[in-house]
Amino acid sequence: MRMKGEIVGYKRGVEEEEEINTEENQTEMVGGGLVQSKKTVVVGYALTSKKTKSFLQPKLECLARSKGILFVAIDQSKPLSDQGPFDIVLHKLSGSKWRRILEEYRLTHPDVTVLDPPDAIQNVYNRQYMLEDVADLNLSDSYGKVGVPRQLVIEKDSSSISDAVSKAGLRLPLVAKPLAAKSHELSLAYDKFSLQMLEPPLVLQEFINHGGILFKVYIVGEAIKVVRRFSLPDVSKRELSKNPGVFRFPRVSCAAASADEADLDPCVGELPPRPLLEKLAKELRRRLGLRLFNLDIIRELGTKDRFYVIDINYFPGYGKMPEYEHIFTDFLLSLVKQKQ
Image 1 (cartoon, rainbow, N blue to C red):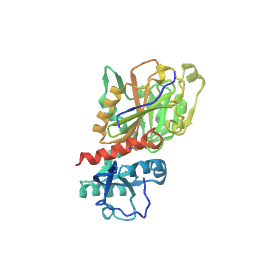
Image 2: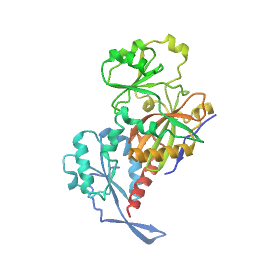
Image 3: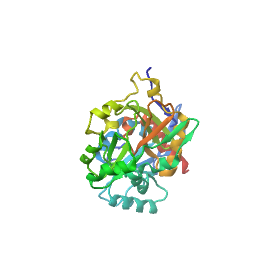
Image 4: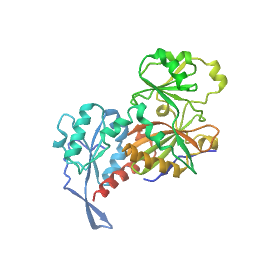
């Protein structure tokens, strides 16, 4: 059965020499007549060069301009308050200095929407705390149950990992992820003796068989877009006993091919129920204080309605999300409309 992705709900730069003028209005023409004028929405962006290339694609720039949205690069060598004026600041930079600059800017420019608050972003950069809000939520209703895998934080001393795992009662195999969520590499440990090969600080998660399919749930404000990605294959008891060691996988969910066009068993490939995702996204937006993030979700093999959130990423690779240009521009316009 061929399964397709679906959308739930609801989306760059411009020539550097172009002068910013938020007082300049755009005029809309309908049937040759003058209908109305609207203020240009200026979005200042502070992104890495890699993120700029992947996100601010020509198609997004063109659509944004047609909707009255102007993307302007923030010059990090100049005071932020001396730039703009901006209606929205879009950012994904690291470092305590940038966080201080942005927090000060938020205090002195309360009328500007900052996507997203630096302190809120920091909470999902540490895997020790990343999934706490999902665990506390313990979402369960008629559409299914959402939880997180059992996990253990190892901050140092790899020689003690095996004892710590035994004491915590975690079951093998275990997925090992760097404590800092900025790294997407992971390892799969099949036996306790190999655990000492891992390099702390890290988080160990119980591996849950999920049919080799992961659901990437992109969230842009109130909009949700779900795509399927191939993931790590299931592990049988026989494989567990015959494959000792630690196996490393770089950026599994990011590098894997899309599974939306694959012929999948409906029991594996069926998307999580829309009402369940809407409720989960709404609660996490409120608890995390974020509007731009994605969830990596798996369905436990052999179940229809038992799901696990295994990762949360701030400002993910939206350029890989179908229809992201329309979703993101609509979102930006909605932010401005809310303030009117």
